[in-house]
Length: 353
Ligand code: ADP
Ligand code: MG
Image 1 (tube, rainbow, N blue to C red):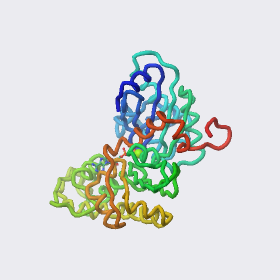
Image 2 (image 1 turned 45 degrees about the vertical axis):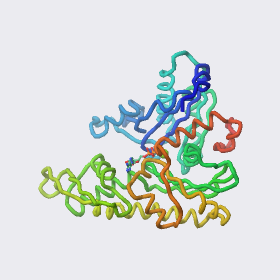
Image 3 (image 1 turned 180 degrees about the horizontal axis):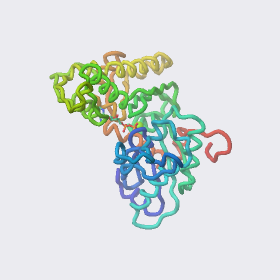
Image 4 (image 1 turned 60 degrees about the vertical axis):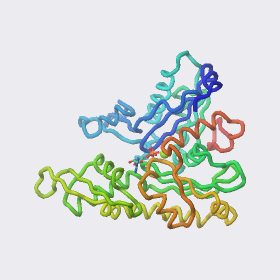
């Protein structure tokens, strides 16, 4: 949010919160808000693995790249430990944030949100790359923690709260109390897998090959996890596998719900397992406060209802659910003294404690 004090502080220092998502990277600059929202893609030279384009530009190269260039998603594809690629990404986003400033400011302080499943090596790579990309101070935060803060949950308090963050590559479920994560689960089933489900369904039921973008459009338009008040239909367009010619078929939201059921069930199971491991005191808190959903995948129609129905708790989608992590990372920078303990510690040789 833009308030005058923040705007003034922003003139003299640069605080940046970055949500390094598997699908989308968001950059939140203190006093300015979210100024960058780009796909987490990097186009690299296949032989040298040197980064050639980043963000939107890299995304546009997908499917159109010459043979020697590949476009990858470092966060999803698990190549975030490749230092050069991670550094190039962070450098691009930090420099771009700098370009938005009117005056020359000293090197920024940066909080980066990372998926909670990443390895120690990957955390190290992100930390080092952030410093190397020009940050004066770098901090890491686990995405579900940042999402909870961005959604305004009272994670510092003794009473428990819970977040389900459904992104492109991962779904993260976490229960918080006293500024820490008490129980968590991270599974590799989220929005991308749902797109895959739809592609697979079209292939096996209609012999129709459809692209990722078409699948995502269908998911957003008529995908659901719970019966809709009014079921809908949509036309799938692709290539008929038998004739090899362009083909199309009309599908209903009931069929798409069936196609998505495996992924939806996996998410429901992750929530149930997390609740199963949650201490009873905190479970009783959740019976009052309910469960908050964040991330783009939480917008799937009927998903909140479906989870609520399965676990018998109130479930709601955070306001502006796709920006929770970036806003939460920004909040941590504004109140580092109090919120320092929510950050991720790094093992050996780091300046972070
Ligand atoms: P990440 O944090 O991993 O970068 P995001 O939180 O940006 O991911 O969410 C991206 C995912 O959300 C994509 O799979 C996208 O298709 C999905 N998504 C976005 N809007 C909707 C919607 N209205 N319904 C269902 N899925 C959606
Ligand atoms: Mg995310």
